[in-house]
Image (tube, rainbow, N blue to C red; front, side):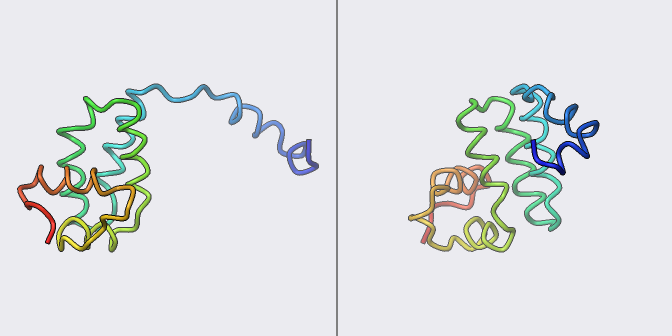
Length: 108
């Protein structure tokens, strides 16, 4: 164990011993993160989508959505609202689903 870990062992051991969050807990966290991004547009777009879709997501779909939540707001804004081309992105199917959910149609 590295020296820094030994020094902070009392704090580190409980952190490392935490169980993995359940699927329901991950869904709640993803919904919260989607609705509290920092810009009103993304809060509303992703929060409404998460509220409707996340409770029924499979573990694989939830992992994709959690990865999407790491994308910066300007990129998401361009993809979702402006319909900028993101066909090469791993998130293309999810972005299209969000656009359809909000009635934004297909990409240009």
